Image (cartoon, rainbow, N blue to C red; front, side):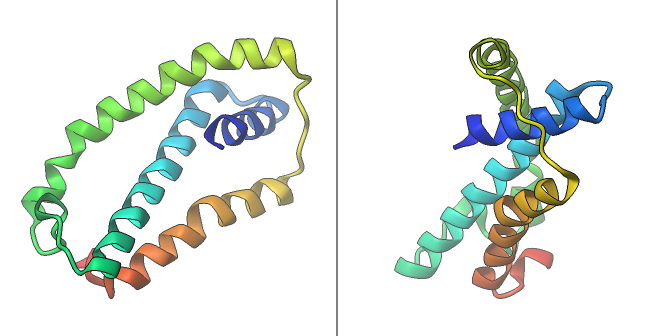
Length: 127
């Protein structure tokens, strides 16, 4: 799923002559993965009423502890897809998508799951 998402975002940025489409796509895929992981954690918390200690929504220290993990995760995503994009672009032709399709894709993949995280947390994400 994320490979296809990366390839579609890459094709959009490449068609718009973005200065660094590889890293920008990695950032968007990282954000999508991040939102999906937090949606999974909130879903588990909602279904079985189990609070994950390091993911507690009432502690800022626990949220700040995620930054080094997030940076390492972003670097791994960048290098993983940087190596795969060359193989994929040789194997498949790069489709060009419109700006509206790109916005709809981002809404479906990032915004709607983020809304789900916020609703499942009861708004505790912002505290």
